[in-house]
Length: 248
Image (cartoon, rainbow, N blue to C red; front, side):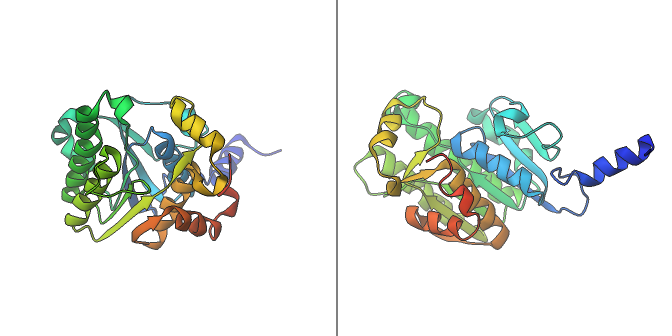
């Protein structure tokens, strides 16, 4: 018969999914962590066991289950509630992390028009990037979109392209920009996107978790540059192929 202390010690040693070890030096700060790609990214970073802290800047705190994490699995996840209209007031929350991630994004419909879309999608992203740079982030990663172009006449690709150019101008030590195509695996709150997923061939779609897995590995390996839709799939196929087609 094992004693109670021995059982507790064995359980602690068996729990490799937490991030409390002092040997883990990495810290990641994430915006957009409650979105479709973002919550998958949070789960991948936490479950990797490579971070002492995964800091998610959120509008409201969520339970671990929202991120697909079990109780006792999210010891390194720290959710910081912020007002994205006043990010300068939260500058300290951007400090002390080597890795920065933005999976933040909206649509014209969700924002309520062209002007609020630009204010939210461009404004929040570039302000957060400024603060990440000032706070010491060395490797920045951005989820953008296929077909971005800062000179486009269309609002969405133009805005995404302008965000990319802004981040490039900040001269992070490392910058990785992801340009996925149609995202599969989102909640069904976007009717047009749901319809598009129903009629679009798999080649043109990519699961949100696939993008998140790519971001995790890019941080681990220091991959930089702009990565297009098909290259994201190829990258993940060489790392964790089981997560490439999950949900599609």
